[in-house]
Length: 184
Image (cartoon, rainbow, N blue to C red; front, side, top):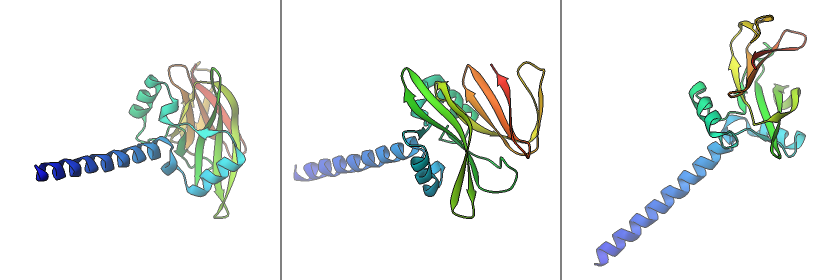
């Protein structure tokens, strides 16, 4: 009887510890904390107060499922990309804030400069819709959804997708950011 009680207590303790560890891991994945460097996260909080990186929990269920199929990443609001072709550490980011009844999201490029500082470029600001996702696309030639515009991409590009709605490809041509609609 005493052995059973001790065994039961031990099992309960193990289940509690495992449950707490699972919750902590889920929250870390959910928050995208491991998707970007700590200093970049701090700079985002300082430069874009009230905005947060798009997480799986912010997506509608179908959009989250599409994202999981399209990407091996766990954070739909972050993609590492050589956008400018200079080899500097660069991330494409989707930063959103709740704006009833939907969200306002901005497309941001964050590039590490001089070893420690981060430079931000706002590519698109305050798109009002369900939060989109961002993915990296390889260099190549892309044709827009209407078939009337072609974009030759020399470096990696980003595609921002509002699943089952729209998709826009952004690329750097050496002087400025260009964009084409890939779905509408």
